[in-house]
Length: 192
Image 1: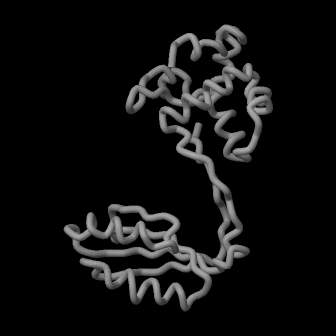
Image 2: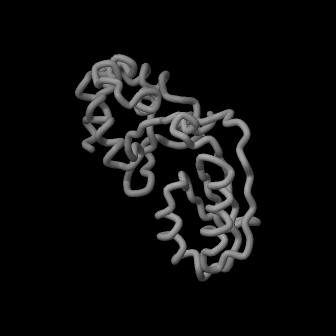
Image 3: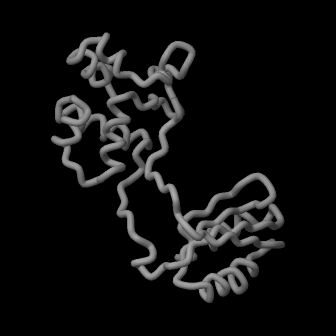
């Protein structure tokens, strides 16, 4: 993105106003918003965060409304969204469902331990299981953590005993059944 597009907000509001609106984490000694991130991307600034927050709240929010929230022009809001998408900060848009109303009343975390040589082969297999919402390879007492959603404990049992424990190299599983989802944030922002 051209520097002129980045500076659009600064020209319209004045440098002092833009600096005042900048989050505290960009203060002296903190992260520099002009410092390139991976692949040459810049860290999101205050305007970007307003745009991301609006889209996280409701991805159907119109560009005019987003521009008003961020106090920028429609063109600037559009260009910011395009840049955030091109740089991979915004990776997509999704629908948030009520899993219980979808017939998926049981949520569990499944921790899998096993031998290291088999994990590459298991990636494709795990990706094919529709019950798995998230799959993380981790460091610690387990090697893989799965977030699974199923209709009932019978389906959970079948998933664990017949499919997960049969994967190559799996030596143990541990299951944590979720009894209440307390926090679910579509976007987590860095602490100030």
